[in-house]
Length: 315
Image (tube, rainbow, N blue to C red; front, side):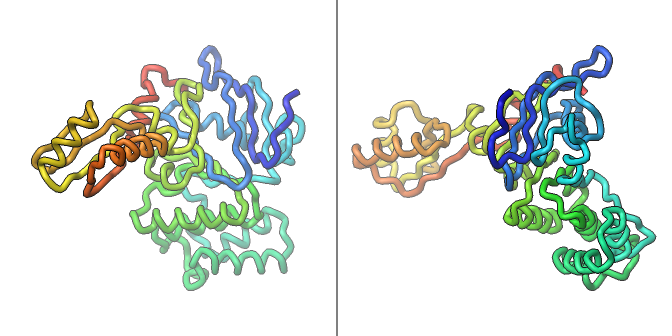
C-alpha cells in the first residue's frame, strides 16, 4: 500500500463513482499539501461536486483510497469530519437571527462549551469585521457581510481543512477581493483550502495548484503558470526606440511578428524563465537595445477552453 506523503491534507487515489451506467469519476488522483489552496476547475457536469461530496463524506465512492486530515475515509469517516468544514455556494445563515446568534447556534452544534464558545464568537466577529452589526438581523446584511458571516460560522469549530464552493458568487469586486484576503489569511495560519469556482481569475489569484477535471478525468494539473504554458499563444513583446533598431532586431531574431507603427516585435515564447533568459542572452550578444519588454502568457480562460471538451461532460 502506497504511504501517504507527509504534510498532506487530502490524498485520493483512484477515485471512481458511477450512477448506473453513467461514469462520473474515472479513477482520479488528488494530492493537496497542508496549508495550501487547491482549486478544482471544470465545466458544469464535469464531476467537481461529486468529488467534493465524496471527500466530505456526503456520498461513498465506488472505488479508490481517500485520506483527509490524516484519517482514512473508509475506516474513520467521523475522524475525517472532525478535521474539515464546508462552505457551500449559498450562504447557510439564518436571516431571522443576528450574527452573534448564528455563531452561538453553530458553537452549540459543535458542542463547544459556553465560555470557550463565547470567546470564539467574539474573536470571529472581530476577525470578519462584524462587530458593529453583530446584534442586527442577518436579513439586513449585504451580500458581502452574509458571505463573511457564513465563513465565520464555518470557522467556529476551528477546522484545519475547508472546502469552499463558489465562495464569492454574487459579490461585487470590492467584496470579492476582501474575501480573497480572508482566504489568504486562513492559509497563512496553516488552514488548507479546497476551492471550486467558476471565476477563473479567482483560481489564478488564489490557488497554489489547480486541477482541471473534464469527463470524469483530471486532464491537467499544476500551478497557474504551468497550466498557462500548456496552450499556445504566449509571446514576449519587445519595444524599440527607432525603426532601424526594430529592423535590426527583426533580422536577428528570425521568426517574429512585427508592428512597425508601435515599433514592437512579438517573439513566440512559453513565458518561462528559461525562454526569457535565452532571449535576453540573444539580445545581449547582438548588442540590441530594447526600450521595453513584456511577457504575455495565455490566461486561465484560454487553458480552460483548450483543455475541456463539452462533448465529454460526465455529471
